[in-house]
Image (cartoon, rainbow, N blue to C red; front, top):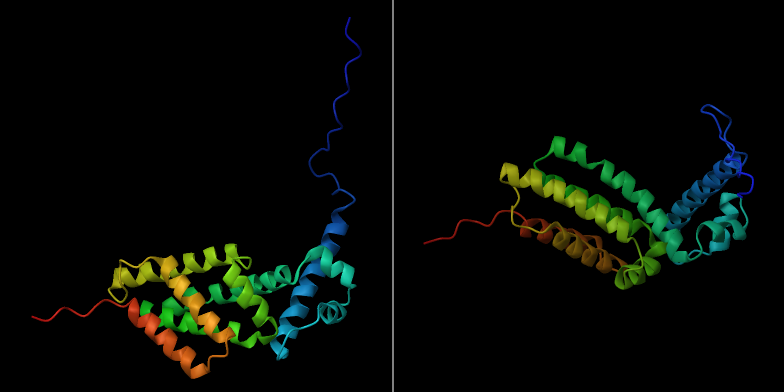
Length: 208
């Protein structure tokens, strides 16, 4: 003989109020956004490493809240890096609408490098994170996808080579970022980006 049937779990009909923890999640999201904004400002203004306590104070939250969202400095830097990458990536359609693909690629890489150069307060973390692979694997995929789109447009128009692996361009670009972190001048960074752009332009026809 079987026992009494277990009652089914209560069903929440469509249109019912959100669970009680939804306001908590909204508050957590707001705190995370405030921390990222405070870190962006702090990293841009500083000439060296920034204390996480100062970022938490600027965001108006406790250091415990910061660590709940970003357990390590690398996690916070990666979040700032990804947020800035949103803006950099969003500029690509405009650049491609205004310039040939090779010129758009150079302009886009210049803007991206400019973002890295202004974040002196996160330079050491970026450098070690890039070298170890701890920083921004998803961001690298986004960068490579963006470069692939520009390369495709350029290949169709004949302004960029069709045989270039986008990830190779990303790897070279990260090398430029490492040079920035190492103290390269703006002039050297510009030359490096010019060389990188020239490398993906079509080769001149071979002479006799």
